[in-house]
Image (cartoon, rainbow, N blue to C red):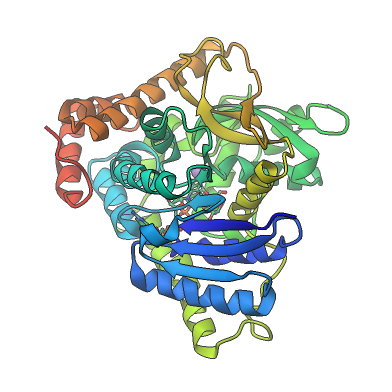
Length: 444
Ligand SMILES: NC(=O)c1ccc[n+]([C@@H]2O[C@H](COP(=O)([O-])OP(=O)(O)OC[C@H]3O[C@@H](n4cnc5c(N)ncnc54)[C@H](O)[C@@H]3O)[C@@H](O)[C@H]2O)c1
Ligand SMILES: O=P(O)(O)OC[C@H]1O[C@H](O[C@H]2[C@H](O)[C@@H](O)[C@@H](O)O[C@@H]2CO)[C@H](O)[C@@H](O)[C@@H]1O
Ligand SMILES: [Mn+2]
């Protein structure tokens, strides 16, 4: 059985340790020969790298080589899979995105609205550079990108690398929602097959099919979620995630036809979301004070004691949804499994009444030859209108960053449902330009 070389880009991410544990738990199904961790921050990379050495020595001695580095010329040589999870500007800049947006009364969120716009303007140049470097050293590697904002990153990579069919953009939110459905139905997520359409963080489940019988379980789920339901797994314990999952019931009450992606709350109820936010303590603060701190404390402790086995940090078989879906996707590509995943891909007629160039998120069959979207056909006017508006915003954001255009940036913000007002958009944009000097191209 072939053993693979993988490179995790953004190796210092707070998800890396869980992903390494996940890979360890799946050594039979997806065996590894070499693991490379690459980050542009030496300190973070070193901590996760040392943790990986301890983990693999104890749990995965079959791995022949582990490299952790900040040198991209070293990182990308002969890799089979590149898993990209960078956060350009880190959580400190996410905090700026969220707080500057809220200061102007707009939604302050990582990937939605003006915050997502600012993040996209940082991510795109960094990702393009990394993909070029990967292709220099590993022209045939599968590149699985889930760096955010994935919708904007996907639009940019489609334009800059139009023929690169081994570059896949994907998100874990629909999978987390499917886990919630599976819990509510007392089933396993793998017993269910989704039908879904939209853009990333902007879509709807149209059917939830029982894989064995073909029965559509969506009506049953709709009934269950018309009232707020408790959904607590380890990764969604924070109060803000609880509020988000509970809010699905409001969206379903207002729009019962399909089941929504949780992120629609920001676009369909922007005022309510702003009111609920604390402009002085946003989700970035919650993450910096919560999971990031906790994970880095764990890394420091493991490094200082030099072991994991026999400590409270023993790895368990219950990995987070984020690590799970990445390994599931890599396995489907490696072994031609033809499983179905929700992936961000070029429309090409999949949704017949939308532009064929649009980057949509839809179910795709995934196998050794890549991805193949399942046909959707026509979608109703309400969704078509929302999607076309949001996609125009995404396109203009990519125009702004690739062409250094102030006018495109302004138009993008005005089109975004969470901003709309020109005078506010101008002030917001000017303040975001100032905050992002280090990352954005100059806008003329
Ligand atoms: N698509 C999804 O559904 C999904 C789910 C979870 C997280 N994410 C995304 O994954 C990414 C990581 O999230 P996180 O919370 O772990 O962030 P994080 O800040 O903990 O980690 C990101 C790492 O990327 C590094 N980095 C930044 N710019 C880089 C560059 N140019 N080259 C190499 N490394 C770079 C940082 O130093 C940091 O260590 C984010 O983009 C996040 O939005 C996506
Ligand atoms: O606020 P964060 O950084 O904790 O999460 C933002 C991300 O939320 C979705 O993904 C995951 C999340 O990363 C994970 O920790 C867990 O809480 O489940 C979420 C849903 O599966 C979203 O898909 C990402 O794009 C966001 O970055
Ligand atoms: Mn996502």
